[in-house]
Amino acid sequence: MARRCVGDIKLSAFCDNELPEKEYLKVQKHINICPVCKEKVDSLFNLSQRLAALEPIEYSPYFIGNLRQKIREKEDFSGGAIKIQLKRIMVAGLAIAVFAVFIGSYLGKTIYQKNWVIVNQEFDELTGISLLAEFSQDPFDNYYIGFLTKGNTQ
Image (cartoon, rainbow, N blue to C red; front, side, top):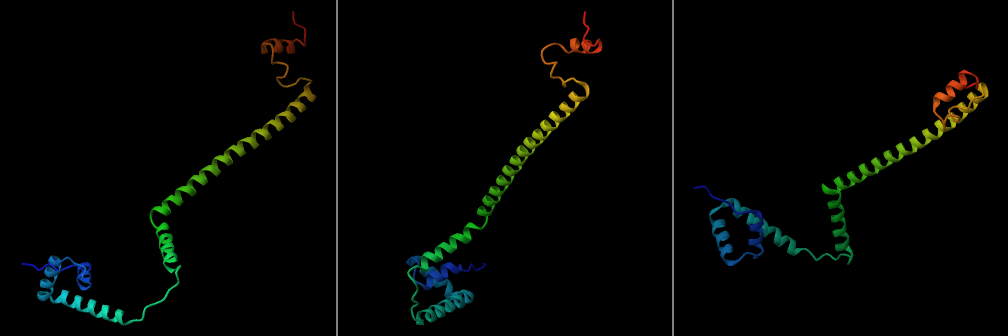
């Protein structure tokens, strides 16, 4: 029958006396028969004794707050936050592209209209006829016939 070792978290809780009594006894029984887990527990006890021998560290009252903020900032730039920022960039790029199309069409329309006025003026000077300005009220046929007969319509 294969032996199932205790996890590292449970071994750490065992060393810190944080397990319920029933679990504590199970882990203790396992440690007595498993050399791998016994070695881990021994190294955890050794580490715990070394840490206990150190002098307490004094830190600024703002240390914990700053540490939490830095952790949040790191979490913000992982996974979902990057996707959200990428979506924002894409939406902004799309908005700029739509804006550029509207500005381009407005400028093109303005340039076209100014060119049309110049062409209309030049055509009027050469022929004496304003382009389609006279054809706005009556059917085009009447003006065409009038133009061909030089204004002599019957």
